[in-house]
Image (cartoon, rainbow, N blue to C red; front, side, top):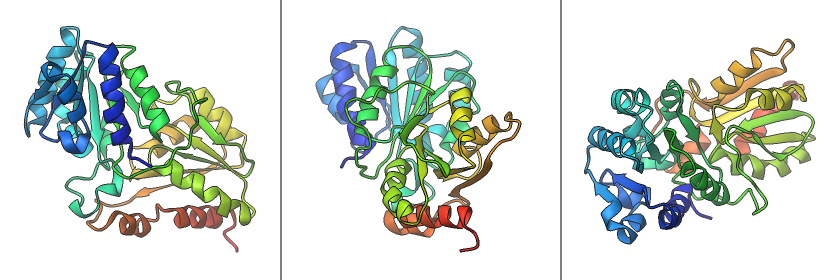
Length: 308
């Protein structure tokens, strides 16, 4: 088991070998964001800006407009906190930079809410023309890196700190915007992304023991294909969306907005982080915010069988 930030670091070096226009703009967090391997392999394509995300975004925008494919790496909380610079330099200019935000969700633990990437999806979803990608495991991370160097559109890559098991095999093929059905069931469609996907997949055994047959859907890129989301959702009487992000502005808003256009939509419930977050060990935080395996089972039991 590795974190997707670790898989990103390895895949970044691999794409650097075959794409000479790939460069890295770093914000004094190379060890944490796993970009140091790229810097050691390609020192002339590695630019250290220090603790200066606003400057790094401007530098990346300029590099992109000169034909490079820059990856700007920092904690997601810090990077998307420079929304004005992203809006002005990346968004308006359609500059082909990849913003890499690590340490998404609660998993940064004891460092607390001043460093937790909990509102980054909400911020980045407001920008027209920006692709958002959030892999669930190593295989998906590798394929997303191949996608990111295949075009020059502005993107936000959201990565996790916590180790995650693989939920895909080598037969998986990432397609931007397409929801990835990991398990087909009947009773409820459970939508999630990133680090929550393996947690939900692990909870399937417990859910089936309680008589719940769930469909597990990995929505790893946004904007999501509306038709595909509607097709999956309407095949079930109920939809549940769970995410390691604020309850406002993230995946739940994306799915719910799509289902508003359905004449007779299934019932929908969502779960996420309702406050600014706390400082504690990651496992304690996921238990406290009811985002661990046991909580997934409890959520769906109370949703589908409220009288039990």
